[in-house]
Image (cartoon, rainbow, N blue to C red; front, side, top):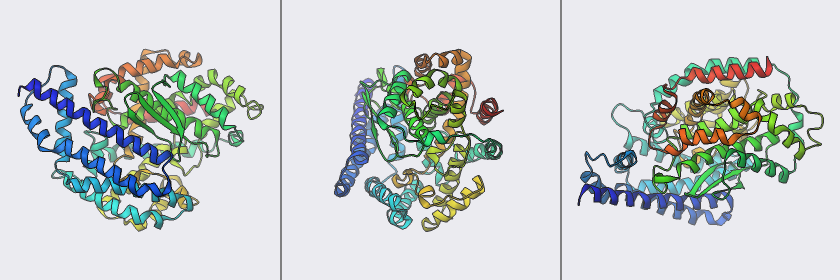
Length: 498
């Protein structure tokens, strides 16, 4: 077999793997949206089987033979070169994992997800921990098999979501911004802002109409995507032209749902850009990393969506949808209200300044859970203690504490840091966007498409051709600098509140 033929065979297998990924995403979407209570067991089996088939394609002898034939081959273009490198990295990881373990983790994730849903409803950690403990044990086993000499258990898990990033580097970055963020929160919490109008009753149909308009203006293509409602908002790609987002309308503030929708819309724009051209249908039709993906969702949600300039254009439209609720509220009060820095124990509803501290909490606990210094049964108390250290108060209930997030039920340790890394990436990317565009004027005119077009070319269409860190450097010509984020926050909130 020639190297060209071997590459063609490799790309064919890669596309089969992506088909399995999309089938898995469809089943997971269905479980989140409409699966019956008694359907969980069989769904767990279905997802476990798919995970096992995927693992087989990624790491079997056929893949080993193809990669051996392609040793030293650089392909005919950057796409082919990176696809070979990607499949080699995945093979080297997955070949270390027994097929039975891969299937067990997938099956347990489905069960643990359902027990998390039920535990969160009634506020019972024990109801969740019985399924969570086996997941922790399996993740430890997985991490131990994947790690290289000298690595911690956390390193290979983090690398799965943020290639090239080391645990100690994340710890250093978080340590450098922890105290500045705590100080900024303390100062900004002193500002009294009347935001009670955000918690009035807002008709859901009108909320959805307004959100859809903003999504369309951002560039969300409803012929390639859709929006639904779920317990925990998320974005998933079940096909190259089938990108789905969800939101929820159960939070007390109308802002929570709106900005959740914009957040997921940012993820969807990235997916729509990546699933195009040569990359479509391959493993490279993804974000460069989870952190880079999160940079775009949080850039749209916070940097753009909560800016005064954005609302100069959109507040009249918002007020026309909700005339009674906004009758006594001017633009300045509205913008200050949606940017109010205040106590909120729920991560997804936290303000822009507090949010990264929520991630630091989870990162520090995850490391303890994995290294065995924190038992599963002790997590709720450890959560409350860490929360008090970072925020100065404890959550009112476990629903606002250790049971608020879905991620651990899937065994996704190493995922949470990417949210905060996304804040750091996003601020640095926005700094570069401001050099290239008059963003203030564009936002005031509601011309979001010009901004999304730039981001599409600079970030989205490159998909996973590079790591997140390399994507950042290629666009901004600068390595990751956490001070850009804290400087952005200082500047923004000094302009908002003085």
